[in-house]
Image (cartoon, rainbow, N blue to C red):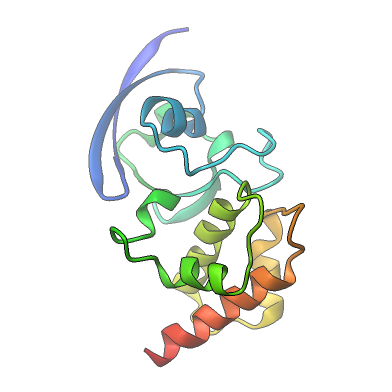
Length: 158
């Protein structure tokens, strides 16, 4: 196993990190950069808890090697809020009680933000389809879907 210096941008900040060539982006974020908001749920890309944006594309960070982030842009849950000001999706998740244990929440938020960036008026079916790669064992999905739809409505009227 060898280590490689990786230069990337995480949430708008240029970073350089030394990581092993077999280390996942999830592990680099959590263990090397102390960004523990992104969660590991399954380690196989099935649950979506580790969802991040990589060059504007939604990916499971457990399926991406850290070295693949070289020269690319990574957006994580830590980049959603602006200081103490929550992103509208984060606020709606609170208002709709769309979270419980919190393991899946960061992945749902990153995925929902990605949806609203390409479709500001999704139908309920579109939200459910877009979030199908994210699993929750606590809340069911209705509150999460309602929070996303409510956010979309508020963002359109703003």
